[in-house]
Every structure is written in C-alpha cells, then in structure tokens.
Image 1: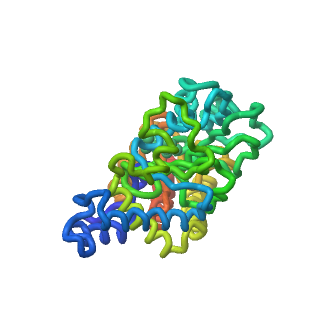
Image 2: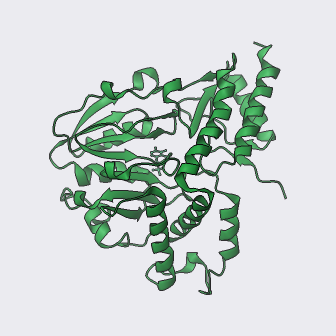
Image 3: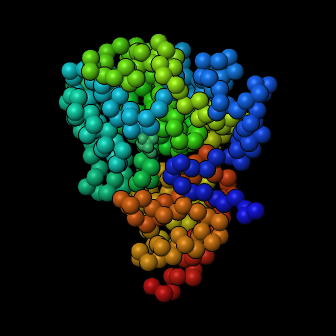
Length: 362
Ligand SMILES: *Cc1c(COP(=O)(O)O)cnc(C)c1O
C-alpha cells in the first residue's frame, strides 16, 4: 500500500487519520444499530443521538451563545450567498466588503434581491490585502455588514472583527474552528464544511434567532431560516453522513485542546512556510504581510515553468495539491486544522531545497 500523502488541497481537504479510522471501524455497523450511518433514517433514534451530539459539540467548540441557533444544511457556502439576502435584506441596503472571489460572488448574488453597497473592494490590487477599519465605508442603517474572514483563493485573512452598527454576517468557510471567535458579535456565521470541518455536502449556519422570520415572500421554504429553525434542520433530509463525520472531527478537535489549541497550531504551521518566503529572494508571496492568511499560503516562483516544476517535484515527495487557484496561478498551500505539523515542516524543507536547486538558473 502506498503511504498517505500530505494533502494541501483548499477543499475538500485533509481529514485527521484518526477520524477516518474511527469512521472505517464504524462503517458497516454503527454502535449497536446493526447498520451503517449511511443507511439510517434521519428520523430514527440512532441518528437523533448523532445529530444532537454534533450540535452540542459545535456549540461547545465555538462557544455559541444560547441566543444563536445552529443549522446543518446543504447547498454549500454558495447557497448562502442567496439565502443571506433573501432572509435578511428586506427592502434595505446591505454593506459588502469585497476582499476576494467569494465575497464578490456573494455581493453579486445579493444584488438580485436588493441594494448592495460596497464597503470596500480590493480587486484593483489583486485582493492582496485586507483594508483597515478606517478604510471601510459603511452606509447608514444597513440591514447587515457582510464579509469573508479568510479568502481561500488569495490567501488573505481579516485580523480584526469589523466595527459596525449593522448586523455582522460572515463567511467563515476556510477559517472556522481555527481560532476563538466571539459569536455573540455576529448575527450570522456560515461555513461550507469541506475546508476545515467535515467532508463536502454540509453547510453550517449559526445565527441569532431574532434575525429569522423576515424572509422575502419568494424565498424557497428550504432556504428560510425561520422554517429551518422550526424543523431543527430537518425540513428535508439532512446530510446525515457529513453530520456524523463532523461529530468525529469535533471529538478529535476537543481532544487536541479546542479552538485555542488550533489557533496556536495554525500560527506555528503558517510560520514555518512564511519564514521561508520571508528569507527568500526566489519566492514571491501574494498577500501583503499584514493580511496574510494562516490557512491558505499563496506564492509563486520567478516563472510559470518553475511553478509547474515545484508542484510536480513536491508531488514526488508526497506533498500534493499545491497548485494555485486558476485566478492567482502560482502555488497555494492550504494548512487547515487537520494538516499535521510534520506536513508543514516537510513543505518548508522542500521549498528551501527547491530554491537552492533553481535559484542559480535565474
Ligand atoms: C470554498 C468556499 C466557498 C464556496 O463553497 P461551496 O461549498 O463550494 O459553495 C465560499 N466561501 C469561501 C470562503 C470558500 O472558501
């Protein structure tokens, strides 16, 4: 059997081996149910235990206050680009901070349902930085302020929570559970699970219950937060297997020491790679130093040919999926919670070796 590799994919992404092994052990017969989780009715008592356990674990891991509800949905983060304005915008205006591809898409989607005001737009500089608080242009009486805390494609991350009078809405798809967050400051947080939580197919929404019940009348039932809360995420069949996997990942996360341990680890992991970039006259980092992401490190070599050689050479060493997104080109290393420190260490060593071998050829 070929060894497992270090998988730097941006999403779907790596899952702790321990979690996969537990899922394997329980695959064909979960507990004393005599069946796989994949075969269970979502209305049965075996699945009810898995479901409420996952919800409790997430509430604990993120310190979600009682004022906020947790929803387990489908449709990816992308469905929330529409669900957020359909539920929260009403006849008002929403402020959107566009700092990358996904927040841009969300703003465009929201324009279908109401007025969108751009609080910032960093596209002119290739989304290489996050604006400071003072640069944000907020509108009066905005229904909400929308931002994406970590830009998966460009590799930038907000180091602060925007100050605004409006309800805060945040796409945390690629940095949720990687650091402590004061959830009470947010009206709504959502995240596609496949970056930092679980396999693809699950979207987690955490929202202040007070915000539900104001959806546009054309909003599909399956996208209405009030209906979803009332039905405890079971208006229709939820992504049962993904919820089970989330529960296993959260069990693992808790054992590691929770989100504060994750934050410490993500800093160490990212520092290993950024140190190489900072001490190099070969690699070119995409993100400005004061905005760079702890989750997705984006950089390039002096040429596209060398970028390709870098990615191909890394693959031979068991470091895979390092090719950058097509919008940025170059190289992207995603260092999510499940990436072992050893993976980041191996990558840093490979980067130094590759630079030494190729610098003189420039
Ligand atoms: C991946 C990603 C998305 C899109 O997620 P889907 O689940 O594919 O819809 C949205 N926002 C961010 C920040 C992402 O990283």
